[in-house]
Length: 168
Image (cartoon, rainbow, N blue to C red; front, side, top):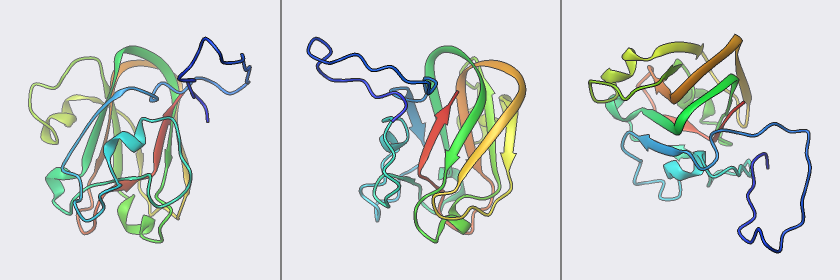
């Protein structure tokens, strides 16, 4: 995967790739409430640098509209032009990934999420609906610099689920 880090760097062999470094890998993630009926659908799946295109490595929220968001903190500002979203593997992707806004910022919001996410600058939108495992690339015409990246779903008739996110 794009930003795999060997846990034993002293004994690892160097590997070179033309694939760009994914800033999301090992970033900090904060989300709305996780769906308890999907115990493997934890937020850490989004930032672990691995996506198996299976059903067990998504983030899945509750149905509550105030829970349908996530914020990724890169730790310090990163310069990028692309955000890749990968929909969940399930046919439910058509309902779980639609009407999504991606916003970026450099400071924490003064109001708690999800309302505070409006303070960030709009990076892009995905109207949906998604198809299972669909790769959705949102691109900026020029590089942007941001410490925080947020996703928020505005259709609350179904859960919010995302399989994977990469930022380049």
